[in-house]
Length: 119
Image (cartoon, rainbow, N blue to C red):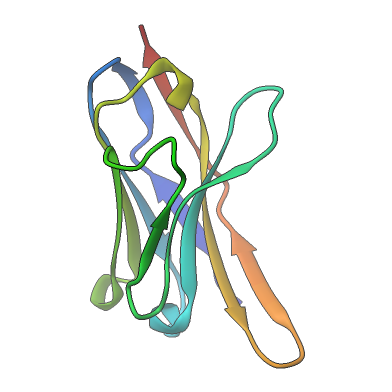
């Protein structure tokens, strides 16, 4: 079982920056693939960025060049640096942890942190 707790959200003006953190419980953090998702009102949850256990990263086209995902396995923490924020980045941001075996995929979610970007 893995528990994920996000923090760092808030209200920021367009063009500003935020840094989200996701603290994970347990000792197996380093083997999980991690990701940040977001969900805006009336929209489906979408993948923002992901990072594998070997720190390979992937980004949604809408955030490439503006957001950076990283992980600190010694601290069991996932980060998302959000720069050059736009009003359309407003959403609840969720942390996700995933690990797969031959038979099953285990997936965990945090409770979310609100990011609001004013124009």
